[in-house]
Image (tube, rainbow, N blue to C red; front, side, top):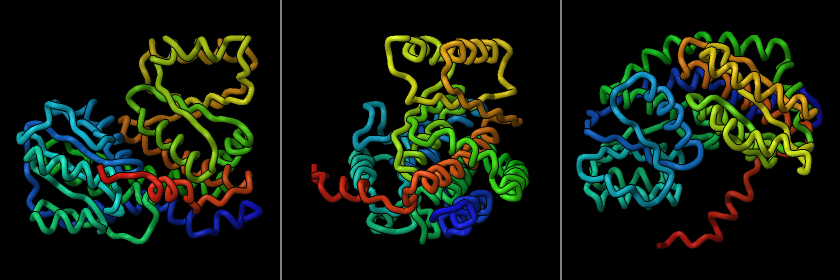
Length: 339
């Protein structure tokens, strides 16, 4: 894959930019009767957990009910039989998630499984837990839209918020923005990718859009085969700004990438602008992406679509294959997950 036209013609790129269509299809999945509970946790790893993080960002702004994302094999002490655990694994074979499922059984939680198959599907069917079956056939990180759409449907049926209604409003906006990017030959994504070659990106967003910064980091890690990190604003202004501006440190290999919320409060925008100005005074190369939207769900998803494209172009420019995931498989093969 040596040039732009080649990478845009690949199946990976085509599947990735079909994110809005994935959402539509997944929200059309017929759901079983969904249980409700006082406490709700989404349990998963990687992209599966990220679908939960996106909806947790939205729920924090729209619902009086609490929604927690658990990325671990053991649970907090407050998880009990009054908790509904939504176990999500696209493949159904994520070892940590399978262990978490067993923990949910042990704690006598209500359990909802969202998966395309694998061992989780078998466990769920054998115990007659609530099952939402996803269409399979792609890598997990490409299936974010599928998991997000199904999870949104489950949460809306549980009465958490009207997530599906909001996504239906957003999808035409996402399609229009995606089409404009593709028609422009993804110029914005390509320019950002060129600035990140041989650099270590550190992605920042406002605290209500943490999921988009995390998705950028994850996609640059997996697709581009690059080290990347993420953080949030305004927490950034209380610690990390010191490291970025310390003249004794070698920061030239790092690039701050800021998801700038044009609809943020005057105070938050002022703090963000001030931090950007201080870093600019230190001659740091800063990438700022401005995003607008009615809700943080809309802004998160707009940023995610752009970040996915950036990660694929960065892989292509760097001469890396965005499809391979050998280190991930090696960890799974070598780690002892029996306890």
